[in-house]
Length: 163
Ligand code: FEO
Image 1 (tube, rainbow, N blue to C red):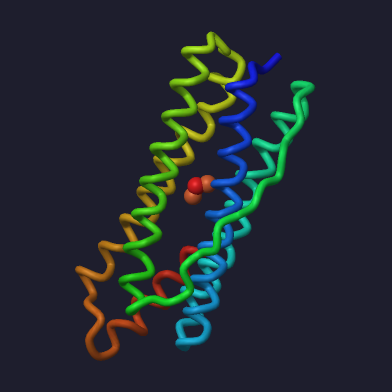
Image 2 (cartoon, rainbow, N blue to C red):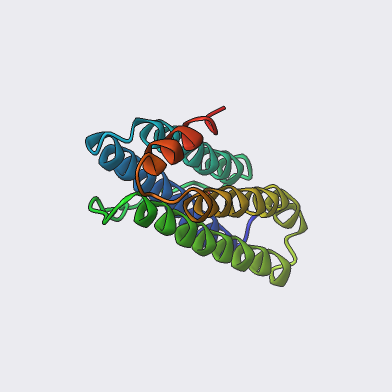
């Protein structure tokens, strides 16, 4: 059984994952509107993945006899300087999500909720993967550069990351 504090923090994480989904969807729209269709596809795909993160938490909360609550989701940014700005923001956002997951793990430990602690390990690993994914994309901007055909090549590389 989850404590009230644990339920509240898990529900906040549901909201953050849904917000993440909307952030990436807004970024996808910006990319599509700027002819960056590889990045648009990647970000839309990632938006769906964020929803799956929210659903996994949603199911866990409901399975424990508590109730998942759906709260207001913040409005994401929809204007970006360029593609590099988009991916700098994705990376920064993932660092924030990782911090939130680690705080959640701390709450599980302080509440002696070992089942939730165990459940959260999936998110700890996932955040490691997400940080790496976006850091690798940012590195492409340094290696390839955005001049000339660079932007086209980066967009194509990002498209190849869609599974
Ligand atoms: Fe669900 Fe990208 O964190």
